[in-house]
Length: 231
Image 1: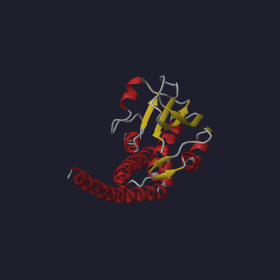
Image 2 (image 1 turned 180 degrees about the horizontal axis):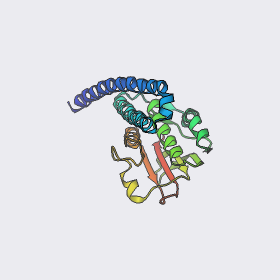
Image 3 (image 1 turned 90 degrees about the vertical axis):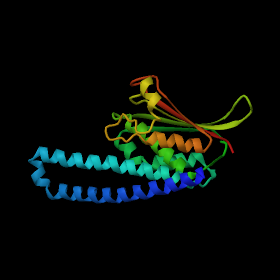
Image 4 (image 1 turned 180 degrees about the vertical axis):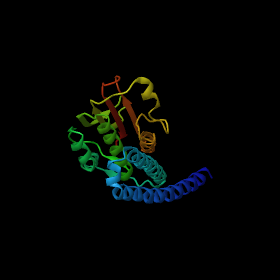
């Protein structure tokens, strides 16, 4: 019964988010058209220009919010299969290539030989990697280095795991912030909605894995470590 209610809730949320997203697309499109039509006027009217920009920023926040809600609703549609973690990471680096170049970020990759295989839902894991890479890029506004390392690990009980580590030398976080980063709607970003890492943690939990974020403090960089059980 609980599973049925959860599934029904997912469908309702999915439907509402789609409707909201459609409306936001229209608002954003018309705002951009107005901006272009009034370009000459806006150049001489800073107040009006700022007001239109505020509308556009607000729409972007709402669009990101609905996108995250839609992604969360899709968690009820997991399709697990054997995936190549290395190729999955590389595909997300390619997807964020524009942001990487624009932000003057250097990516270093280190993959251990003979990595264990992982059984996962490809689309969901891509979403997690995309979010973490994007967070790292945004934490280094003046440029920096993002180190990605993937390795096998065996615990004291003989269980095998795959560790995926993302380390940046960005703005870092204080302890109080780290305690809250997985709380829904908590964000330190101006246009953030506070759902990205919350959704990521839920996805990793569905994969019987863990997501851990560490930082030594402000301007000390951040490390996000995802651990998957080997399949």
